Image 1 (cartoon, rainbow, N blue to C red):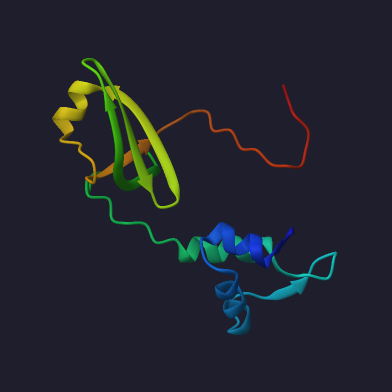
Image 2: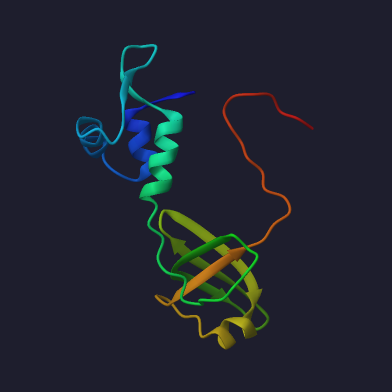
Length: 136
């Protein structure tokens, strides 16, 4: 399993380095040393903690859906002309942008500061890492 430095773990979880160190001290995470002798945590253990710590806001739609990628957030920008609109949501640390008709913006009652859910249903999801080779 990969070892993740404390500072990187904090960045991935959206907390401070001190919070990760406190989790190590109270036993929520196990500490180890990386190849350079720096304090690190096991990547798998960090992934499990990240999943446990995830606190998503309730989806206001309360509907059943086959889409598993649902991001609840606040509308932070709307750029619209007479036909099309670009709507930006801030969903936790993620910025999600949607292109839709201006009519849809009006029908949904979207305005700056309103709560909305971005639903992503895709057959293609690209995952990148800094390791490995490019595949064409």
